[in-house]
Image 1 (cartoon, helix red, strand yellow):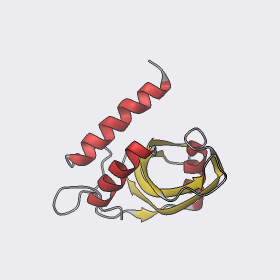
Image 2 (tube, one colour):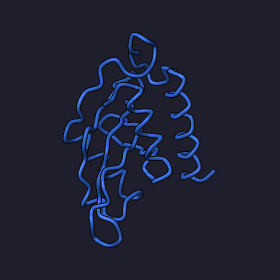
Image 3 (cartoon, rainbow, N blue to C red):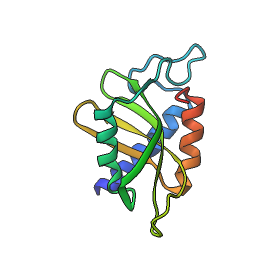
Length: 132
């Protein structure tokens, strides 16, 4: 199985588990059993890992501006949500798009949803899960 396919399946799994309130990463659920009780702002080093993971997703990851990047800490890894604005093929900023992903602390980030078709779904899941 190719690495891209694995990430695709992980993305589907993350969306499904988030939608149904599963606690896949050992996060403390909110009182209603859904999402993250206390998301925190991402640190500069965490944003650097996210930027690196965006290299394969964005045309110009160096131009990326991040907004509302929040982390929910779990025992095995951290889930994350945020918004990113980067330059498109015309060299103009395209507007903020929602994304979600996974973070292995101090090692690597995996971005699961950033494409146009996934961005709205990612924002919806993140909003319902209490990230922003």
